[in-house]
Image 1 (cartoon, rainbow, N blue to C red):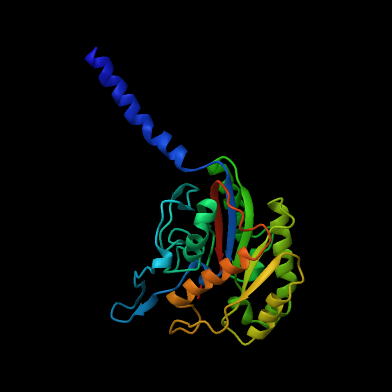
Image 2 (spheres, helix red, strand yellow; image 1 turned 180 degrees about the horizontal axis):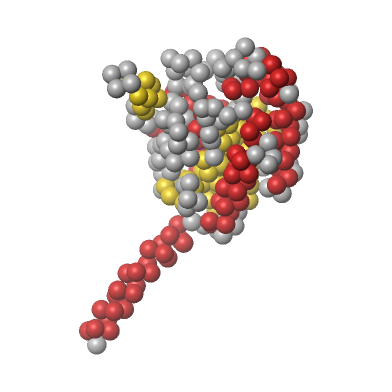
Length: 285
C-alpha cells in the first residue's frame, strides 16, 4: 500500500509542472508585433568598455521595465518564458542588447489584457530591403508570429510596433524607395497574418546613419495607409554614439507607443488572455 502511494506521489510530481505551465499560458492571446532595428531590439545602457575594448550593457533596469509574471516572451526556441531585459538577448545575438521600448510598453498595458506576450524578432543593422516578403527576416518574423499562437493554443493579432530605417538613410536609392518598400512590407505582413486592417504603430526616426534622414522620415510620416499611426522619436536623448536611444528615452518611447495604441478605437478593451508583442528591430550599428 505504501509503495502504491509513493508511486502515485512520484507520478503527480512528474506531471504537475506540465499542468502548471498549461494553466499559466491562457489560450486567448492578443498578439502585438513589434518591429524595427537596434533601437527596437534595445541599446539603452549599452556602452563601450574602453579598458576591455568590448561593448557591454550597464545592467540598469528602470522600474518601467521590471519583469512581471504576467509578461512573457517567446524565446528563439519558440518557447514561452517570463520576459526580462534584454528582450533580444537570444535573437539579436551578434550585438550587445540593452533596454528597448518593449517592456515599458508591456508594463503599461498588461493590466488591460491580463497577460502580455512579447515576441522579439529584431535584428540590428539591416535595411528595409531585407524585410521584404521572401527575405529571411520577413519569413522568420511571420514564422515567429504564427508560432506565438501555436505555443499558446490560440490568440489574435492586435498591432504591430515598428521602429526601423536608420540603415536606409545611408544610400540615396534606399531612401528614395523607402516609402514603397514600407507600404509593401506592411501590406504583405497584414496579408500573411490574415489581418488586413492590423493596427501598426511605427516610429519616425530620431537619427540616422547617413545623410538621407529627412527623406526616410518623410516616408514614415506619410505612408498613406489606413490604421498606421506614427510617433516621432526626434528630440529624444541619444547615447554617446549619436545613434541609439538612451535608457530613459526608450522608456519614454514605449510610453508614446502605448498612447498611440490606446488612442485607436476599441484598443483599450480588456481581454482575458495573453497579449503577444512581436519585436522587430533592424540596426546592426
